[in-house]
Length: 87
Image (cartoon, rainbow, N blue to C red):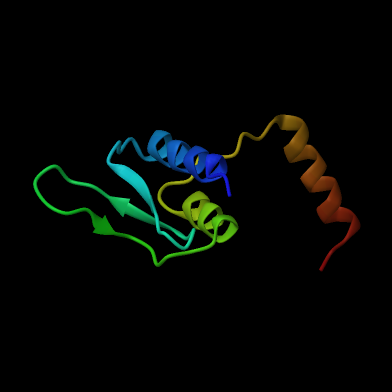
């Protein structure tokens, strides 16, 4: 099993949060978990061991999220949809 997707998810988390201490650990059974390392002591475990897909989803939802860019056209389209389907 390749862990490229998991590594990319960690790099995105580091960029979003500005914290370069996030890392992942891969167990012998192929599960992943997120840690926040500190130079002074042992790393803090931030998640339970997860399969790769679940780990990537967890990391993508962890920490600050990147704001979604919205154009004027997107706003106008959302208004039209709200007028057509009042719920």
